[in-house]
Length: 284
Image (cartoon, rainbow, N blue to C red; front, side, top):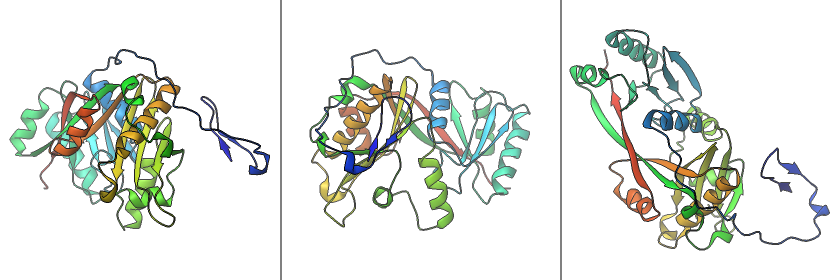
């Protein structure tokens, strides 16, 4: 049996010592203003919550790789000065990713990335993929939804959780990188709504708490279990846990073309804080 206190390490006890138990209600998150963070600061926080397996500085930029598992963990975060003229910096980025057999993506943030970066990328004829960063106060999220008693929290993603996560592939190298990325971050929690015995979870989610901010991600609901409020319940429990650890604001990153997810999150009170782009550098 594991007891997870509000602070400090988990405490492990033999189950035979358990005399009685009861359901503890969600932490009553207090209403508070959304923390103030500009695009560059929030992108740095997000990088800590989704840490790449391999990271290397290029001036103030950060080269990131994780066997191709997600663009976020396999792109250069181009914040600040790379310490080289932009053409040389981008050539170094292309070479670094080519050596790893990966496409070279540049995470472009405005404000934050060099002002001349977009012009240089346009000159190279790159393709852009926009991603929205949505934010919301935690108090409203923690009080959203019903069925929260069905949600279980854990510090690690077990086989059932991973089986419901659609981004994990059958490639052993990618799966190992995914496990490292998923479990990386200051304070990571995994939420699960169990399915029937022997069946995968009905819903899952992940949250990383970093000071004032909590990152939500991997919110997945099995197709046959959708429209029953399970995704909202998962987010409510994760938000409550984040509030217990002192967070006041939540954020998530969603591709601009994922209109269904955006509609769900907007219904929970999220609004667009900023947009960043992944730029794919041409080969050669």
